[in-house]
Length: 550
Ligand code: ATP
Ligand code: MG
Ligand code: MG
Image (cartoon, rainbow, N blue to C red):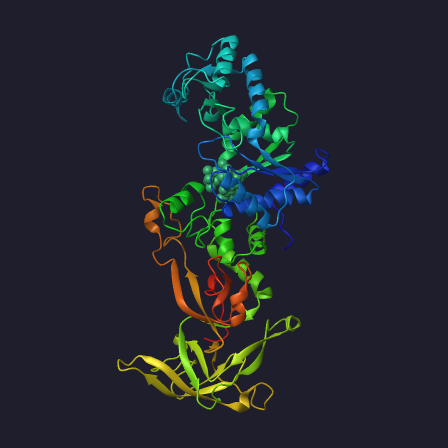
């Protein structure tokens, strides 16, 4: 990986280490298992793991599973697969639910200290009493309930004596605080719900704010790195650590979220795309999920390089999707084997090539890396070229094939077009061409220059394949920018183009999903898991920035 540039979190950690405040850095990546990870999470993963790696510590994978209503085991499994795929290894797999007993004990501690109380008002009343930025909060009539009484009620909440919503536990902080998060936040709710891990052991569940900092402290996390929307929660995070007998005192540092144009990075929105059928599941190659971009052909190396390149700041910005695509091109350009595929085949007959014969040509696997060797490419009398590499009425600047014109066949020789075969409607059915044998590799005319070079495959040796071409999922740069318009209305109806009758070099039919290939002039592709030996399916991950012949 590229050496990451300095950023404020790294600088701050280094300073604290130099000052002897820590021996090493322990971080955590804390997903809520209520959906698949997306590219925004990749930024957080890369940051957390790289800080720990760089400063001699480790990272825990912690499932923030405090809300059983939305959490599922399949999401836990998918998250683990995705973090591993990105190339990171966590030290401990943790679950906030592992700490429910300790968190409960600490809640009793707060109650006994007069720092928490059971409020028996409904959620709506409590919400209204919390006030606004300009109005102070209103004290609950239960705020001065004796600790004894709160303890008794809280124990009975846990024992399942009350229905959902009958009571909540609130931290007793300051109803006049400028920061609304400090106006006696709710830290426990009654929810008679089964939890994927703790089953029916609990019918009260801690709030995110209450569980998170204490989980960090239990795991001896030194730096709790999170996105900027938690900045206003930091005083509460601190208050809880300061008032509980926790084993360590982590610091929370916020950074800005990753936003990418032409897509959405929010599990809630991505869940809608899946649930409403706008895409074919979480791993649809158009999705900005890690499962989606992996299926499409993005590599972990490219995503890590991208995260390093965009850096870590505290200012919000929208990164062009093209920055990520360039990271992918940079990665694949150096290592993807080259191959030829024809998306929209037009038959071309070499009239001076013997019928029934195959000539085996050597083609470089990677023109800039001769050490990777060569592959054999079959030349036959009938080949396919790309339909739009031929134009009957070609403008002057068209340097591909036209009647009477010459073009070089990639890895082969120069040909000239003599005749255009058409059906009764005038559709071009095939081209008759002759090859110039003197321009074969090794012959005196091999480096004779013609303006255009086109790719091709043998009609008899190539294999039929389906190829899926992707465009942006949304038609506007910020689909969720205007909150008055449903982001769904901005979906690009042409985000997927299926090419049913492409032709590929036969060896490609044996490739596995995730193996990258450059289809020369067309982009970088990888097999889709829908592939079968009889019917290979390829996804285009990204087009080439440049083509070697226009
Ligand atoms: P979403 O808004 O997509 O639901 P979330 O923050 O609720 O995201 P979590 O599973 O709680 O999802 O996120 C786990 C970690 O990933 C958190 O620390 C969160 O701050 C971070 N994270 C989530 N989205 C982004 C993003 N777009 N950029 C950077 N970090 C992110
Ligand atoms: Mg979250
Ligand atoms: Mg969320």
